[in-house]
Image 1: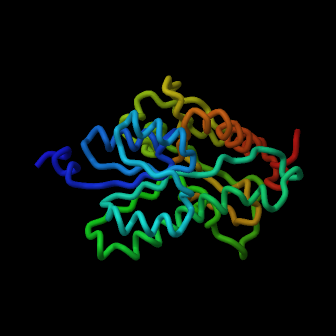
Image 2 (image 1 turned 90 degrees about the vertical axis):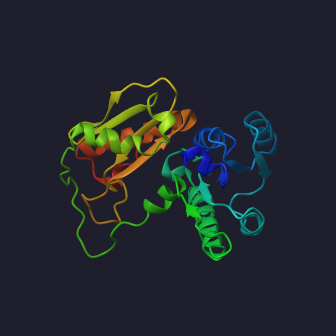
Amino acid sequence: MTETATLQSQTAIVTGGSRGLGRGIVEALATRKMRVVAVAGGAASLEAAAKEMRVDHLAADVADELTAGRLMQDVRPDLIVPSAGASALLRPLHQHSWETSSQNREVDAKATYVWLRNALLFMNLASHAAIFLLLACMSCLAQTGKTGGGKHTLSPKLEKMPESLEARLALSALPPHLRDGATIYLLDPDKGYVVNRKGANGFSCFVMRTEWMWPQFAFRDDIFVPISYDEEGSAKMMPVWMDAAQMRARGCPPNKSTKRS
């Protein structure tokens, strides 16, 4: 049986399906004849995208427990792809309140938790279900380093990864049909992130190697997290990662990373 024939009998729920990576995933699954239900907060943009892609859709808060539970019960999906997340409010730390600095943690982490919890609750009803936690998990993963105990080193040494290995790992953050046109950034521990390949589709990817910018965590050299952004995320978030990597390469202490140079 071919892959397409297998997928034709399956159903997927994709959150954040109206734009960016979420929309790309919806298009990829729909192209393979899979039934897709796209979920997003913006009703107008979601309706237009769903009509263009010819998929089912629901405008709702992706972090809402009742929405997730009702869809899981009604749709009985074989695949769940939580790719929605709040847009980060980029400003210096001293200009944030606790509420504004917590927005991504509250929305992204809660949405991931809500869909994972409901998937586990309905596993027996939707047997052979697969759960794919993409992108939204990164906001949780960034908070799970080793805490306490060890003394933080200001300039810990990171070994440079083999370029081909790092590039392949970075590209794994994107679905296959977006990889050829994406920009790849590689980490030079002595300089920061540098362009390995310039893409043309607006997507970018890289490998997060350290939680250096979180001084409450002990340094670790065993972190390898592939991350990708769509065009908007590339414009807003990549400069933040690049600045942080350059500061670390210069030996800047992490508690200075929020101050202007």
